[in-house]
Length: 505
Image 1: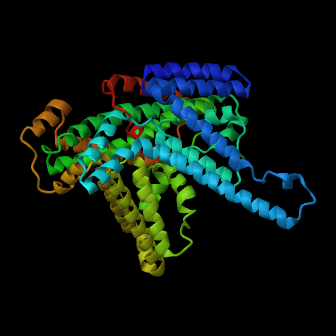
Image 2: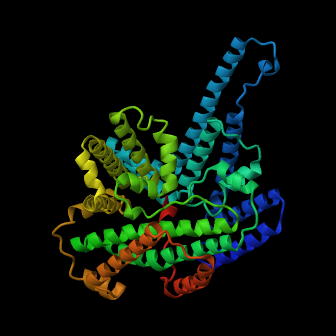
Image 3: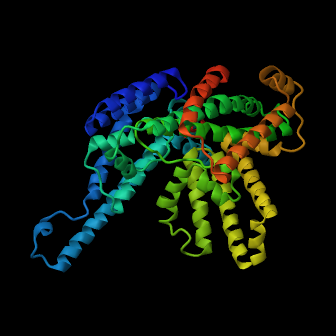
């Protein structure tokens, strides 16, 4: 069952009918939990027991962390001395810290076990020149498939445990926690959602009004257009180029890289739109994940508006605990490098993701140093605020972002090294243009370039309307446009489509 399918539409309509026909919270939670198990079972039924066990373990760990007062005779003995009480409480706080680290370790090990063991074995095999270890890594990579959404699942669990450790109340309602963790719309690829805001919405739920319903179906319609009509079409060209690297020329590689940057954004943001629209119809307002990231003028602002829930997680649970920017410029730069390396590794076990994360870390360091210099030199700060400076900052930021996507799309060393070494002066194979542009796409390279530029200009117009003019369509017009959008997607989307890119993460 995929989000762009008739089966998902019927599934969602059925769940909505059951969910809003019952009034008791526990019945609604059971509806969500059952729906989530059915949805995930349609994709990877073999991993449902693993996820259920992980939910139970994290629920129990949360209960242990939620006990903020040490148990024992002193807890109810009013005659105990203040000094003895403090000693007992210090011991209990140390135990809570141990429990937290156990919880974090278990979630990280779950992630490592499914996503990174083959990569680590390859490194060890190369280091010790051991064919047996390398063959083991190849066998695991070929035979063990990671559970869908495992990265998002583990990060949400870690966030919940840390929130409870910091003082947020631990839930004693297992059904509530399980429904949150396995909520089908966000289970596979987020957005990363915190437990306590989710439950707060559950407590104050009411049937959505017409404006909310129109917004929900509008988001689903827009997500379908982004994914089915645009991202999947771009994906055909991107795959043809990057799956035939030795035949593609330098200009083809540049064009495919630009197309992939657009495809990735439209694919992931289209998925999030459908997720948020589905959740809104169920009475939940999930956090946004994108806010026009390709119109940012600094890499720091890009990360505030690209995959926003991941950026929020990295800031709250890594960057700030490491000291953030409170311990001097050098420590700030080291912290930025570290969190972006972790962000790269989180996306996948390959050198390309590590390099991608390291490049973004270096870019954030460069931005921090430039920002620091601008504060010392008034003329430099003034320059970045004038139109030429803004345009230059935008060009530098987006050129870097799109260039770095090469390592994200081709994470294997042999692939991205080929592209990097052939970006200049490499002529395409004589049959490449015929096979790709004429027979498969039906457009030549200049025509595809024009289409990509037109798509970028339409995005710029939408950005200007939203951010500049602050204009929004009213709900009756949205309701009128949604059937048209869905019909166009059904009519023009590629047959079969392609899997969501972030389903691999």
